[in-house]
Length: 236
Image (cartoon, rainbow, N blue to C red; front, side, top):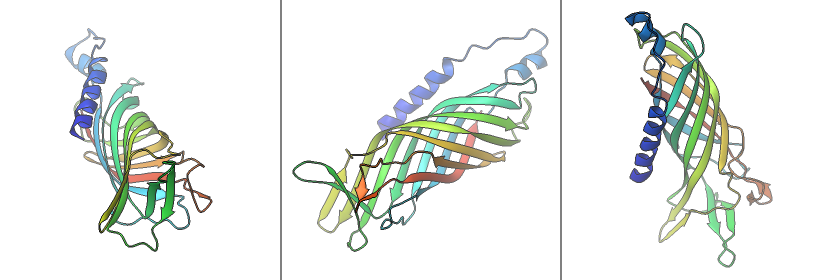
């Protein structure tokens, strides 16, 4: 986990310094500052995660959370610099607590999915680690002299799910899976963020399912669309 975090931080700073050169405007000091300021380039968020379009026998329980970190290059597109395009790179960790068992057949190592409705167990969850590229259209009431302002950001987020882990526990038994058949590793979703100053509400909905049609429970597609609701915090 620490290794992934450090690698992500290195990506963020590499992305930032690759765009560090700015065109300077030789008019006066105030004009130069106004022409160079940008907003909300580093972000950190926490979310409550939901699984939607679940199979009939699958339910979600407990608190499923997410942690999101990244850098977005803010590129104003008008003179007042209150409209901008944002393009970035980030890391996302998501945990889902639910009652869908993920295992594999002993002979073929083919993934199997089943409901835990009638099974006694201690815990069951899966987690995802993603590298993400957000693209946003941004509106805000900011100026170069204040960092307290209203904002509305909307866009899409493309991600690659590079690590998946499921963990099932019951007395004297534990099943862990890292390689799962039918996983849609490329993720795409819509985002919407709005708020004022420090606190900003963030929403995400995946446009493609987490599993494809080859992953099935009782001849029903596992599917699963993910949604995230939470708070987003911005720096610089």
